[in-house]
Length: 438
Ligand code: SF4
Image 1 (cartoon, rainbow, N blue to C red):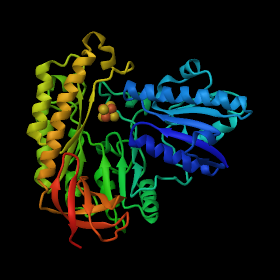
Image 2: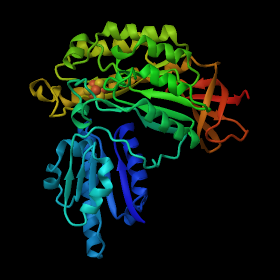
Image 3: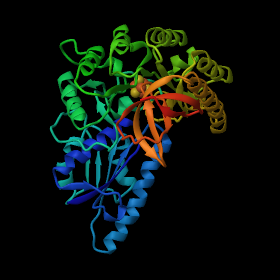
Image 4: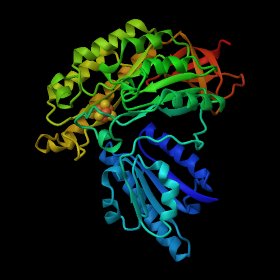
């Protein structure tokens, strides 16, 4: 067996791609290694969402370049590859920057990898194209965990002004319901207890498909599958969430009560500049509608601090929105210009780095307080937890609405067990339960 050392940066979609790459390569006599010293091939699966992620990818290439040189002196050939969003954007330019890189392939070329690996014995290869998502029957080597990622679509048509995804992952393409159901059945048969459906905008699932295939129908069909498992999904675009989807989540047994709905800013002018297709009040209405219909639902979000031209007052509109909306948790980031995007070209309006950092700190404080407040609502409540880890005698798991729970209990439970616990106390990021009720 040849050994591949693979580093995955960025989002769950990249993690899922890595699982597909490893599964496919196992049919061609490759296996993953955890030790760089054993590698015949180094591969970094990259993220281009922020400059920091791009720098991380390049630093991996730099390290591996040094290892490759050392190995060559010892008479061993090692190859270096890069894939994912940075590869898709930068293409051959990477060869110029890193002359020791052997292989560059794009987000839509992963199924060509076995063929590309044969080619790099004799030449450097750059393969980037715009093919639609391809299905193949190779096994997928998933992470050993309770949760399995299941991509339902790829790409995005929204072109938010700060985002590289439409350029790196291309236009939106959904997989057929029958293929998703087939993969879900395999996941369940392998013993996974949670399936997380992935898509940049899950609510527009099915737009390119025939026969009334939409997200609500997909959820319904998945909910009807036999087995003891949960279904999650991410991410939702506020104004694309339909009443039908809310209804399906409300009435289902397996779909978790949890929506990740990036808001990005609490100010209408900034939302417009971001090319987000909703106003603050429309966002509030959808949050309210979900809460009115689904008991104990958590709503999480994403926010950007220091978008070009954002004034102090506009920034504080975001802080106000987090308070008013009582969001359960939010991911935050300071704005990172991506040159290919519309916002990346607003150079004269960029906010100073120190100021962005200051705003981000304020935002993070607000998110911390909101998270604690959200957790406090559950003190004394009994919730179902899926155990996904055990550390020094403390069981860890997640509730249906995705809260992390630490459980102190003398009973022996296994990873993958569903248990009911009563929440006794909480901290900012997790909840604590001492006694199991079952
Ligand atoms: S909806 Fe999300 S993935 Fe699509 S362009 Fe906007 S931020 Fe990027």
